[in-house]
Length: 87
Image (cartoon, rainbow, N blue to C red; front, side, top):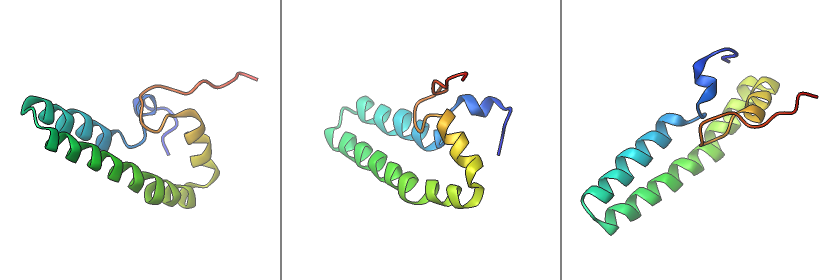
């Protein structure tokens, strides 16, 4: 796992989120389609469930306590670090 990297300032599944938010939602706005917006929301929900139900448990099994420490300091979807106490 990366301990000192610019990637730590980003989110865990940033590629999925970036594609969904800019691609699908942007295109639904551009073509002014409610049906496309519904599709984008459904896809975002599907990706979220895959992350919660498959990817995160698999990473927990693979990395154990290191992954727990990582998730305690990095948000799942939004960029930036979580607040951690210096104590």
